[in-house]
Length: 532
Image 1 (cartoon, rainbow, N blue to C red):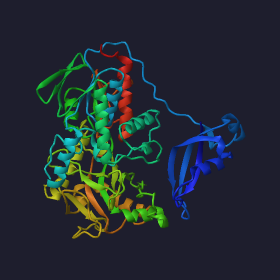
Image 2 (image 1 turned 45 degrees about the vertical axis):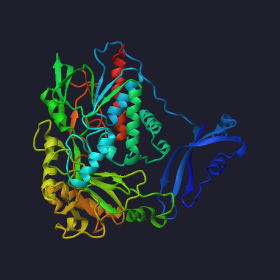
Image 3 (image 1 turned 180 degrees about the horizontal axis):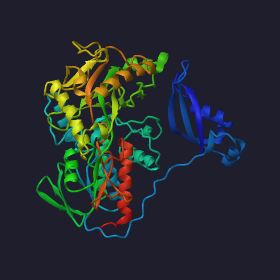
Image 4 (image 1 turned 30 degrees about the vertical axis):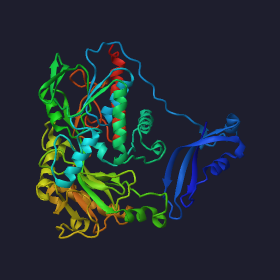
């Protein structure tokens, strides 16, 4: 196969003739082309005159070697290579019990998938409910404001990513990424995630994918238990001996993957109490910002906005303030909604979500400012958790203590005055919003940095500072507030515990968390042999 990059097709071409463009690029007749596939598809919107789809195609051709010689020196034409996932050879140590995985987010599911595929019959414990039950419970919370602390946007099958945009972009360069995407496709994700430059699944499809992953683990010999929270850890000789489930049931265990997610605050507390080495780490806090999706489309696509096939536009922005703080947009959801994402009583947390179609009226994104352990006011391992709680509780109070979120128009936020009414941008957050001054539930330095950033971002995406755009607070769960220490063998300070994923502080997003889960599973496989 040959890999041919840089094939540009104007977006105005309703039916892109990729074959003709490929033949022209290679300089061969149609009879010499035996077939081709899309390896990558991206969008180039830098020019005001035209927007282009940019393709990388893998082609099977006659006389491949001769054609390569003909195009020697042309870096856009080369042999195609494909990352192949290599399964780890099992180790020699004997397992006393089957490995346990705590949590069924991306890290837990992919650790479970790999262990099950290699014959280890893992037991997956999920504190929340299965994805179907969870969907109903979350919908009731959004409609009525009745929070279930054990089953919500943060806890349950699939983890926090289940109620998101299902974005699969990642900054890591790891051969396991392709394996993750291929497994997601095999479980029902759209095939385009294998080649589209900003792949996403959408929360509606992701729920089915998660369920299929679970069923595959079970088919391979694994077991999944819901409503099974780890409430105790038994340790002997500085090594895991067992787990306590739901306060009563004792489970013998000597190997356990800690894939508990970034909001498992009670689990973090338990780990600290049991002597596991845990420390605070930086994360970010801020608000959600909502604009009309049409405005973002025009800002990004100009005269091509609304063209069939382009889809809703997105953005990714960053600002470095003179005071040393940084603000950035995060988890941008085109055509999405702002959702209530609390996991504890008495706190308001926001997040963003969209379906595969991304066909909502508004675009939303997190608008965040980085914070560090120096901001937390304590050197306690869980100081970041308490820092989050402080602002979530203030937001809860400002919203009316009924899980309504405080909201403010951008013009009023910039001017430092409360909003008396909303404009044409209607907030999508449910169960509802209460007009308040967001500076009352955010640190002063976050407010100041956000005000500067909004003005700067307006010069990059025209209309970002739209006076009637809506800010909804607070967003505090951008990443884990802790890092659970692990060594080069991926083991925690207590032997047999393997921290994994975003909650443990080693990932940031669905794909990177899944990859980290694979790495931890590989470490277990390379050390132990499967149960007989």
